[in-house]
Length: 249
Image 1 (cartoon, rainbow, N blue to C red):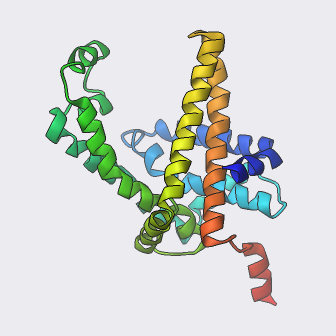
Image 2 (cartoon, rainbow, N blue to C red; image 1 turned 135 degrees about the vertical axis):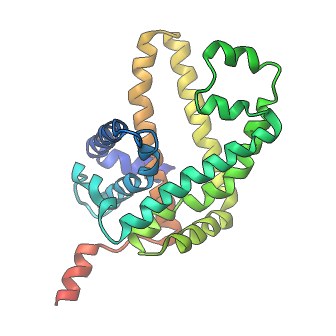
């Protein structure tokens, strides 16, 4: 996490512009007819490559430019990254769908927007929504471990989708205690910062306006932290431009 903060401090403007470009792309994709609700989720692994590549650029003393957003769309990585996004949605559907076994489908209805706000408030107190959420989390955690480093492994190591999921899962498993602390610390940071703003400014429009840039910065730093974790586990990725020049020579 310290390394993630350090990476962000070196080029905060470049990483912020990259994130804003990512948000604009997601907004543009969301207006696509029929697939507009699925594509933003499916393309998350494709666009996530831009952030880790941006961190690599910082490591190599290069500028972080918005053009990095197209990194994940290059062959041969794109088909596997796109498949990773499809698998991401399928696993989420399986995990949330399984929660219907204990909460009578309440979590599914909330996620899919089948309940109005008033109906949800009336149904939640007498439901087993907590058990449904817990079951969904338990089922999804192994998938999240497999997804954690799959995208950069596909992009940098040129591994297939199956191998990337395999190596990512066991990389997290071998350092599970560190990742538990990592996740718990990020959760604590998110809760503390939001509550601190609420105490200082109250539940006002100003508080919400401040939360937006703060959430953006924390999200960027989280991506930088994941890159730092990848770097420590798998090593610093090779500079492809140097590799190409050596091959030509």
